[in-house]
Length: 151
Image 1 (cartoon, rainbow, N blue to C red):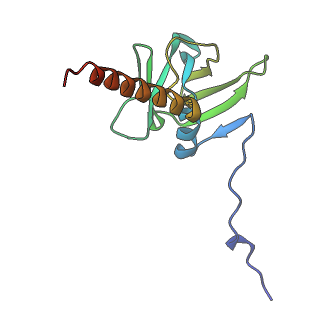
Image 2 (image 1 turned 45 degrees about the vertical axis):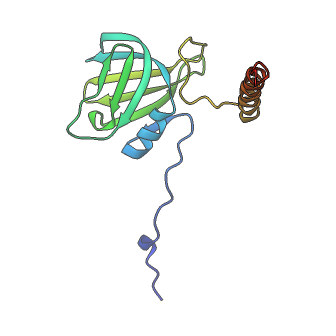
Image 3 (image 1 turned 60 degrees about the vertical axis):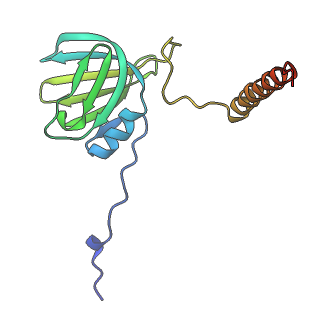
């Protein structure tokens, strides 16, 4: 009896802390989670630009460009060959988007910022309590107005 071992699919890759990611959907998932980043753009190993900004959009479209401008990053995963996941000497994770001799390094920024994080979760109980207080105050105000009525 012959068994064909090639018919069994390999398990999906598992990348933890270090590795190279080539699947566009995996790259999009990673980049969508970053939020605010410090970026360093190098070409042929020479610094071209650096700064800090927010990842506004991550997409995959062969007709659109990756754009970094005005502290906003619009990242097209098709602008890059792969993403390399690494850690610095201080154990901080960073992400290198690589295309030929171009490297866009993204380092998550974790310190507080005056710009709110669009992924932050509101405490549902606190939000409900605030809405209840606002509605109760409005009803009280309407009742007070009715008491002044001369009829």
